[in-house]
Image (cartoon, rainbow, N blue to C red; front, side):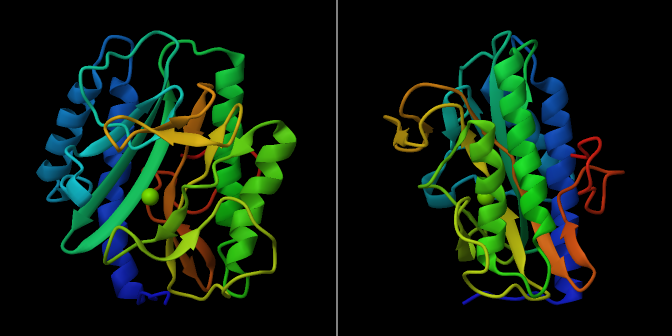
Length: 263
Ligand code: MG
């Protein structure tokens, strides 16, 4: 069952989302060659707690850290540690914040130094696919419209969409109904209604869509060792259209037309 939120509840998720956005902006600035993912995690936890939030991921099903940090071929769920960011890496950073019982969740992939043309195109295509998915978050559309928007953009660009990991409802809990695959058919699935809040998160690979779980039982990496990117926002469906609750300050709204990437 898809739990819908009142406008007042959406505001509470938006407050958590502001902390997520601020934390990701800080991490983006820090994510340079030489920094360790443990240092990023420590700074993120400090930031979140100083803003009155709780890092949602810490302790979630036993996850030991505040953020996920997933370099290069790692898709998601990397446990921060002694990994030192190298010149030319791409690092996927995922942050969840609980504030007064309400959860927001977002992710982005950062280029450390010069990662090259292929990596940059992967980031651009993945982020653009998220924007296209967000544009479908309107009352009267169907869940499959969101899924299809990612797939129909990513695959003609020569990349693949991860199948075994999906987006999700969010708000009271980190993972609520429905599951939101990044592939599917338009016009299918539940009708989208005002008050639904979704974490939409395309995970896009340069090579095969297949992923493997690591020895730590958390990290998911591409089966062929090629690069992967991940962009995610928490989005509320409102009468006026999609409202991104984890947009960076000054980039509120949808920014869905062509032009500069707003988040
Ligand atoms: Mg998520």
